[in-house]
Length: 212
Image (cartoon, rainbow, N blue to C red):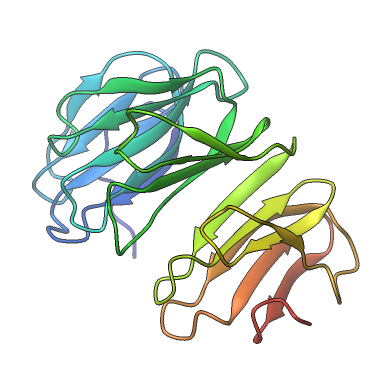
């Protein structure tokens, strides 16, 4: 059975759990910003008091958190916390971000993607390189065993793959019945297995890194 933890009366859009300390939970809401719990959800503290939070991602070490936020219906920036979610700083504005991913081998390397393409930071969000200038990006995942391999989804053009950390990209749509790809997930044990969620077509799976 399920038990309510709170906080009450808010629409919760995203949830992230610290990979090192699972008692630490951060949630993103519509209109009330970010709440944090350090006791597994028994009590909550509002660490930002405004905005819509669409995506929350902890770094592999659990010391930093990134959040995609907006002031309206479309996400328009990225927040970063370096103290486990207590305080937040805007590190990217006006980017329409929908997905965030860390490089597990280099936690200061972060990828964000969204309506304007894909960006990469090598210095924990201080600066960003525009690595794919394609509109309509919806999701990005990093191969946990070979972090130079990336997969990214697009709402009109399918799935993109990079094997050099985002320098070059190839479209890998063989076998997909639609190119409206909304979400991606990668198998953490066998990362050549990738799942793609399509608009109106369900879930597709590749076991060879997108070759088929």
